[in-house]
Length: 84
Image (cartoon, rainbow, N blue to C red; front, side, top):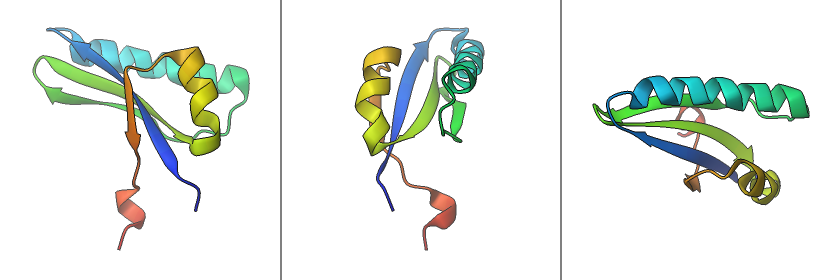
């Protein structure tokens, strides 16, 4: 299975969760507009003042999308549902 990378955008402050949720909408719009084969996007709260939006991409897509979308960071993605 090809390695997957989770591109992450960090948002901080009182409205962080709302901002992350809104950013996810823009990520999904970009996926549709560019006709990308990307199925995993999301957002989550880290704490009351920190939230993230994310997109999971294949290793081969990572550099191009990183340069275009400018995430704050990335990490290896492991699908916990398919892990024994």
